[in-house]
Image (cartoon, rainbow, N blue to C red):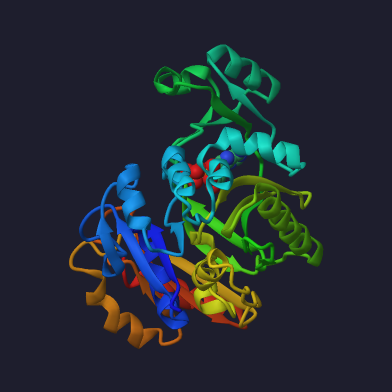
Length: 372
Ligand code: ADP
């Protein structure tokens, strides 16, 4: 019998589940926030994901509910579970992706390596954290941050005075990690326990936004690959994650890795798997949340490079540029999100794979360049 997956949230992550759902013979339904969303072509309902009744009505008759984002409030998630709906990832796991303070405490219990951190309730607390960490720190709002919003490097507690004033709980203070680069580890876990890991990737952020990803991470030793994969598996199991998990990491000069944050869904750092791995993260997410056997995570070539299309062309739509980009870069794979171009907005990405890293980087960047 055809299985049905309901996705809450109509962004590009839901959109990119559509093609693998068709291939797998899975019916995909999407609850979108409004008209003209990236995943509107599979939308079966329009409504507010913060409203329990709306989400419960959407969840009727689906085999499993999953998500395009982590913002569905806990009471709504609990109402789904109470109504007997299979929810993957479930509320117990999702809380660690919804609140960075909750995540830090749980990762500490698991013994996962992470930056020094503290919950700071007021400016005096932050002052003492700064004094203990060389006068500089990273302060984060525990909830609701994305793409670097809600993250600030501070040297004076007054730098985040308005966050303290607006917050009804403590903020998260972290040591400013002198990382040499950022990495991302993708893993997938089924409710019945099977877990698989992809090769760790290098991610490059600009202005707090992911710009490029290279997989596997260049110059990564066997040991680093193993440590990152094991850490991803430990976190997926320890937190009871089901579906895809992305573990964002910092690598330090002495080849240590520290956990920055978690995403419990397909993630920008895993888009390379669409064209660079046997099983894309979007297919894998569907398999995982349906508790089907997971697909192989092996790369299809030595290198996969993903370059985001940020903002899009100043005039006209993305599709106006297709023919020119395709003619020049026939090996590049262009993925678009059906969004209107706007400065800084992620509107698509390009993947290039091959056995020569420089070529793949060139192809992906040059093809993406047609769209800016
Ligand atoms: P968001 O949830 O908005 O994506 P992150 O916690 O991932 O925020 O932080 C965004 C970026 O800020 C990171 O990718 C990294 O470049 C930088 N950053 C975050 N935490 C630290 C830290 N403790 N030390 C140094 N840089 C950091």
